[in-house]
Image (cartoon, rainbow, N blue to C red; front, side):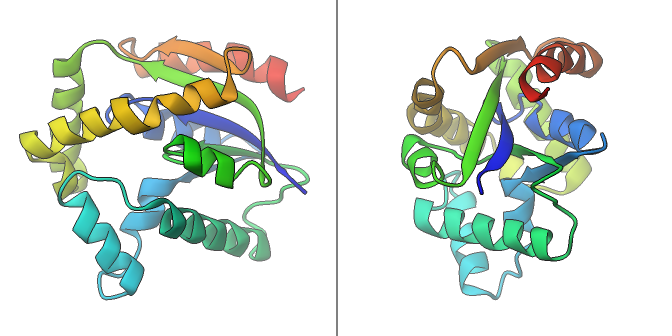
Amino acid sequence: MKYRTILLFGAPGAGKGTQGKILGTIPNFFHCACGDVFRSLTTSSPLGKTFIEYSSRGELVPDEPTVELWRSFIQGCERSNRFRPKDDTLVLDGIPRNRHQAEMLADTLDVKAVFYLHCTNFEALVQRLQKRALKENRLDDANLDVIRDRLKTYEKETKPVLNFYGRKLTHRIDSTQSPVKVLRDILRHVDKVIS
């Protein structure tokens, strides 16, 4: 059975996590942020060491361990009944991160919509990431060089995922608006694609 899925997409700092958390509070929506799954790893585990090694340089963790970790996490959520695929719509942010991951997950995800949180203001993204670094103790968001590398990596590797899913499924949302207006724009489309 494929998971009915909504993808939240955008550069680091565009607001995917904020919107995902809000959507995850709505009955029959289950939010899964791949970054949170990685950050919950113990640093002494092999996957935890891999995550630290790559994220400290602003690089993405390789596809195979990323997808393996995600599958393991989501299956655990199913077993514990936190995620009920027959009833719930899966809200993903941070995965798939590139075309190869999208291809690896094609047999698992029934993607109903992609919400592309678009921000053309580079400085606004940098400020959001640095503010988040202080607030959430996320060291990977504090260093300006790491931020620049993450944004370059996003442009190069992640944006092509939009082409994989195509224009028909992709809804462009202006993420420079207030979070409540971004949510309003997302909810306008969610009602049409889920019902």
